[in-house]
Length: 497
Image (cartoon, rainbow, N blue to C red; front, side, top):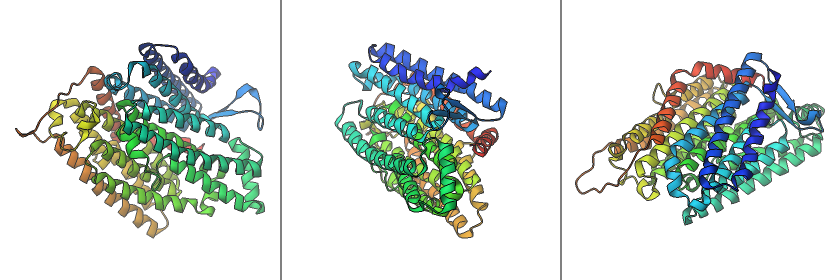
C-alpha cells in the first residue's frame, strides 16, 4: 500500500496541469475538466486519509528521493489528509451550488478562465496543506493569491475590479512581509525544510544568538498571514471581495482561501518555531488581542450593513477572529477549537453564500435587506439553507457553530490565567449576541411575508442548488452532533504534527 504515498503529489500535479490544459478548451469542456479534477483530488485525499488512519503515523514524501537540505518534501498526517479531504468536498459543493449562476455571471469567452483559476486555487490549497518546505509554501501562497484575485474580478464589473485591486494591494503587502520573514529565517538557519529549520532555531534560542532577527522574522510572518487572512485591522479588502463576487467564487473564497494561509501558520507555529518559543516571544498574546477585537468589530460592522452579501462578508472577519483567539491562548485545546472552527466556518459560510444567491436570483442588486423580504417563500430550499447557516453562525445547538463555541469555552475554562479566561468567555458571549442580532434578524426578514406594495423578483431553484444546499446542511449537522471523531482526528493529527 506504499503507492498511496504518491497520491498527495499526484493531486497537486493534476490540479496544476489541468489549468494549462483548460486554457485551450471551451467553457463547457473546461468545466468538465475542473469537476473531474476536484472529484478526483477528493477521492485521492480520502485514500490518503484512510491510509494515515490505518498506519497511525505521518509520512514524508521526498521528491526525487533527495534528502534535506537539497530536496523538497511533502509531509502527510491525519490532520493534513482530513483537511485536504474536507477542502475538496467544500469546493465541489460550492461549484455545484453556483453552477447556474456561474453561466449567467461570466461571459462565455471567460468561462474556461474561471475554471483554470479554480484548478490553480485547488492546487495551491493542497500544496499549502501538504508542503514541508517553507519557501514552497510561499510560492503556492502567491499562486493562491493570483487565483483568488482572478476569481474576484472574473465578472468584469466595476465593483469587482475595485475589490480585486484592493485585495491585490493588501495581499502583495502580506506576501512581501512573508518573503522577508522567510529570508531572515533562511539566513540564520540555513534551511528551508521545516524540521531542519526548527532544529536550528532551537539551537539559536538555547545559545542566545540571533534572538532579535528571530523575533522580527516571527512577527513579520504572523503579520503577513494576518493580512492575507483578513484578521482585524487588516480586513478592509474582504467585504467587497466576498460580497460582489460570483456565487461559487464567494463560497470558495470565504470558506477556503483564508484557511489555507491559516493552515500554513499552524505549521509555522508547531513545525518551524515551536509553541514554547512562540510563548516566550509573546506573539500568542498579540494574536489573542487582535482575535478578540476582530470577533467584536467584525460583528458590529456586519450589523450596520444593508447589503446582506457584505453582512455575511463582515461576519467572516468575526469568524477569523475566533480562529486567532484560539491560537492566541496557545494551548492544545485552543488550537483544536480553532481548527474545528475552520471546518465549521467553511461549511456554514459556503452554505450562506450559496443560499443568498438562491434568494436573490444571483443579482447583487437584490441582496439589499428590504428586497430580500419574503424571499424564503420564493426559493424554499435556499431559505432553509440560509436559516441553517445563520443559526450555525450564531451557535444554536445541534449545528457546527454551537459545537465550535463549546470547544472554545472548554479551552477557556482550562486556562491557568483567570483574567484571560474571563476575557475569552465574555468575548464569546458578546460575539454570540451580536451574531444573533444580524443573522437571526435577517432570517426573520426572509420569512416575513410580502406586503402588497412590495415588489418581488422571480427566483428559481435548480437541482444543483438543491444538491449543494442539502449537502451543506448535512455537513453542518454532522459537525454539530457527530464532532467526537473529528475532534479525535484533529487531536491525533496535532499531537504528531
